[in-house]
Length: 171
Length: 138
Image (cartoon, rainbow over all chains, first blue to last red; front, side, top):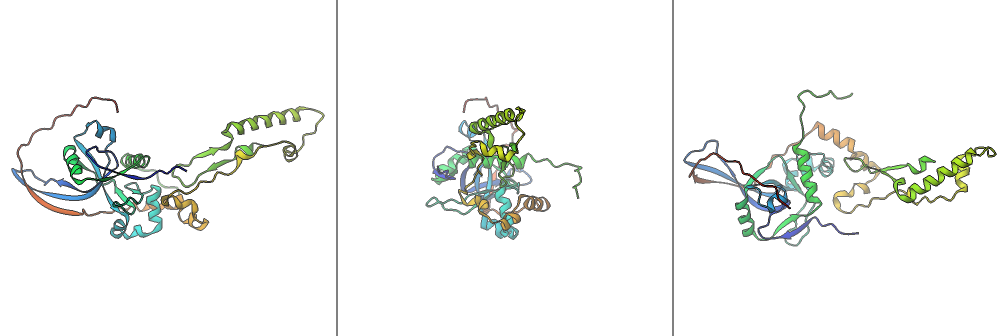
């Protein structure tokens, strides 16, 4: 049976949906803008969520990224996810805010299972990101169809509708 | 007769359940049509008493290859649920997990890997303008 690898190594300035960028700096603006401001810079490992076609044709000024974490860190932060049932819910896509990615076994880029957090969406300036990845060198790219699966999970999370008055549950 | 060919197989390890009707293969459809025609002609002949389904089907050559159970093989570690025991399947059943996740929509606040402050001088504050993007080829 044909192998369908999850990841490949890429480098250069061409950004694609599913590119994983380690320690990406993100700027948090202060509540008020004055002549001189102090801004917080936070660093996350992120995965690009913007569509590849928009990135290739440079139709975006800002690139959408979501933070990713190793599953073990995620579990340590919320031990309820150490429970197999909870992890299984992640795998089956029942935790809409999160998406599980497979472990990476590529030499030099080994990682355990990764969690993508859809609730924390950041935008990074396109030009900045291009320069940043060029400096960083090799990076990991999530491959098809796992990339589309990630995108679909993000869409599913984003299109949820909360009803003001719901139909009461059947008991 | 229909039961044999319309026996659907449902792959339960997927949020959206898909039914695979095995009679949709050309061979299966052909066999079904031939069987129906044969039964019809036998039953409409007055000299025959309508025999039971079992007896008739034993007289016919039926290719049952299209009705064999489909086996999904686990390819990677994220899809090992098909290898679980019945006990595990009960524990991780869609129903149990869905109810659990609806009742407890957990949100995990993760801290950034690194955090620091920088000072910036604001050069200019201007009103943003719409960015017009023409549709193009991929």
